[in-house]
Image (cartoon, rainbow, N blue to C red):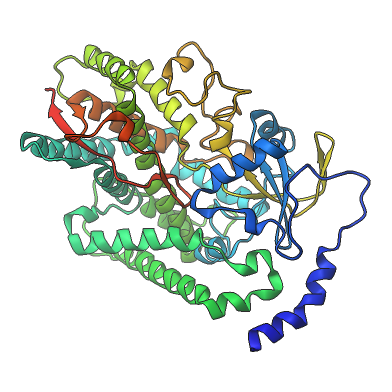
Length: 494
């Protein structure tokens, strides 16, 4: 009864807020919404990229919606993405303060979720110059090669026993182990209790960040999040993550800690804090917020990309045969693929691009927010508009791609299209000021992993399963994971 009474008291303010404002310039076309709710009832969170793509096919590649109080723009074509991410990038380069992201990023003092301002520019400079340079990524090469070779050895043992291999599980474990060693020098796979704790923390963080919070769309009704238990769940996730970060920091600050052969990202951040060489007075909370970006971004995207690439190859044996022939002819009897070899494998790289086109690791780029009113294609976009760029839809746009639903890596062999942010037909890592600074680290991991899987083994479906039975259902979340695990039989090649 109390909840209903409070809602009724707030209703006049809500209606006043939603009354249309006079404007000579129309908003982009979009579906008609309901009073108060706007278009929230039309969203399907089980597969939001596909849901928004279906709506955009009716209303156009620049689609306007209202989610509660929040004006929202959905971008679904390369031409419109270029307008948003390049032509008007400075207007579209901020971030909305969504509850889940705000809480876990220590009130937006990280890199990924921080609004566009002087602080963000300085933090990006720190990350690019000290954490994610080509030289730094190369320094972690021994970690990547060691962990990929360790996985290949484990698969070899299972292959000799003819057991079905849960490749999805193995690749998630690989991605987690690599990022843990790179970020803070620990290999959690060595201890089951620590491994389970880490996985649980990451999965829960992803869940609460991607959850629906009433206050994100109805600012006056945040009390509903408290009554529903969402605030308590978010607070608990934050406390568990904060404790985890603090334990890692304490270990690194311990003067009795054994010297490590490999300097990790946490070492670098703590040294920067000690030196105070930037205009940001780095605190431990700043460091923890950056660790959040590295853990969530690094753990998810690389493993999801390899899983989808293997899914596409198993559904297309012609492509599988061609890419394996390329790898094996180049590597010969060497026994393992290293990162230098990948430079000589253009078809492998085309396979990875094609997989990212159809199954981008982050199908809806991290939401942006407009800093001021602007015009795009003759339409008015208000200030403080929430902006979704649908990379999944752009990768399937027939205006940009011939036969967009076909898995056809050859389309990239004689093409200059790349995913570095200059070709808006293919933007798995975004583009412009808010493009992913960790792209290089992710790409080299994907290339090395996929090359070794295809070189070392021939892959078959379990008995009784046909190519047509391989599903492409997705799990909801920031990253696009295959909903059902990819389980295969491996036969050792060499």
